[in-house]
Length: 250
Length: 350
Ligand SMILES: Nc1ncnc2c1ncn2[C@@H]1O[C@H](COP(=O)(O)OP(=O)(O)OP(=O)(O)O)[C@@H](O)[C@H]1O
Ligand SMILES: [Mg+2]
Image (cartoon, rainbow over all chains, first blue to last red):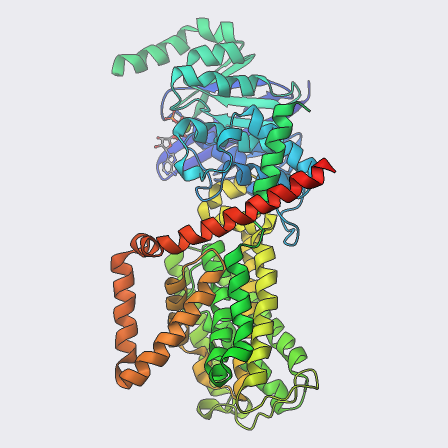
């Protein structure tokens, strides 16, 4: 099976702290792959390295076989890899309509178009409206993002990434902070992604992880600890020890 | 397409096109501005200053209000434009003012492009310092190259030829005012278009959150370089207008005071909606005119006091004061919207 994403010996050090420790991860094309691990295990750091927010101390990153280690963030997005953020990163002054419109225009190469009115192309408008509808943002599409309720902001956080039509999608705790009864909208939207989109999901909620993942990688102290099918990982005594150990601390 | 989707599409399309629709107050603003050509002919000299200052402030608004780049050295580009326009006329290199204006703007744009790489790095504070440093350096260069620029005496003996070969710069400043106003209007139209384009949206996104902007595929640095260069072009044109309407350029075009005053103009008028620079320029010049007649030596004191007062009172409360005006604006807009909706409905019926 072809690989969507691969890392080779990825290392990230913050001073004396090794946040990513020699991670060699492979994610297959079209995979539903979950990345789990206790708080501070280095999951977000790994996403930051993959998306180009941070430069690795050592190691390589391959996207669909091409080395992208040196590419800028936006170049990686143009190659089809898009991420979401554990803590919302939105455009407070823009409305959801403008935010989604911007993502769609950029993907269609209209970002430098300074003459046309934003959203004057019919095909783009259809795409924008369909994203707004799918993410239940239509009723608030003209509100400033900064004043939206958290649940809507969280939906927008995921919607912007999906509006970029990624081939590889990195989701950093998409349901974080969303109450149990509001999660289904986010989870449904992830479940509805086309099968050929590769998804790497970070999540603490084990119900979500096990209902979603075909493969699970466990990260502990920056390093890959265990990897395998969901059932095997669930039964693995070492994983149990890590999580039970963590719970014992709390 | 389901009917729900198509209704969303219609609303999305309406909201996006509403962004560019002309508000009645905007139309009134420009009608009044052009009416000044006939209404107050004796005040054309100060109105000329308002026009180029407004353009200069609009230029700063493009980078501060849209892209979020704060600058304390915007006079650098103003000065380049002023000197280039004055030199072109003095040495009779380009005699036609409109063409010279364009060349002066492009020269300023080139300087803007080169220095953008210095300014984009780092935080607000480094940007302030670097932009300030660039303006100081250019001023000193103009001072050192006295054989070219006239040094501290300024560039004298500039004789301007008629605009388009037709309209002389008369001593009452009538033609000069019309010229500046038309240039301002044309460049305003371009800026308005730009601000509402996908490019303009991407600038606001970068200002709000550069991390996320990059994460949806926006090349942040490239966009900032482009808008910084465009703003430098606008500032250069403003400086060239000053040089052409006064037939003079001096070191003072690069001065720190000019950059600082400009920031003040923009603070008075407000950022991020394009009219802030224009309104700020009107208020600033009128106040300067009024106060400097009243108390010539204390003008800087009063403008300083005003700045402190504005910061202390805060924008929110200032916006509260003009609430009745905004209410009126909303009403006017609502009428226009209803008329547009009625027209659209009528068109659909047909
Ligand atoms: N920019 C940084 N500078 C210094 N240390 C950092 C930085 N970013 C992360 N770290 C450290 O690296 C380690 C891994 O952090 P990371 O955010 O990747 O964990 P995580 O697995 O995402 O945790 P969580 O489940 O809480 O989100 C932590 O000890 C964190 O304090
Ligand atoms: Mg994290």
